Length: 118
Image (tube, rainbow, N blue to C red):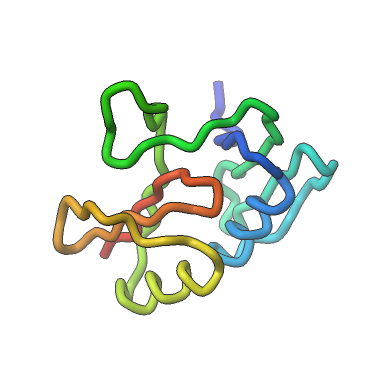
């Protein structure tokens, strides 16, 4: 077995894929509108996006009765403040709750939490 991709549901697969393509500097490999795949230039597993009409934004941090986060992406960076600024310029928001000093939890345009860390 070999893990080939992680898939995120989105309100608009193309829009969310382009956010991550810019954030990670990864090329688009497949773009079928409602299914978009980014290729890891280093050869690792891909990151894919699919449009899901019933998608609901997860709560961060978790909240009783709210849509729960099912997974998140951890993204290593060298300069945390610069990476956060870049993510925000591209359309992310910084979460109000931050669990650790060397990690910044951000929310992508569809509300998926992702962690930038040094």
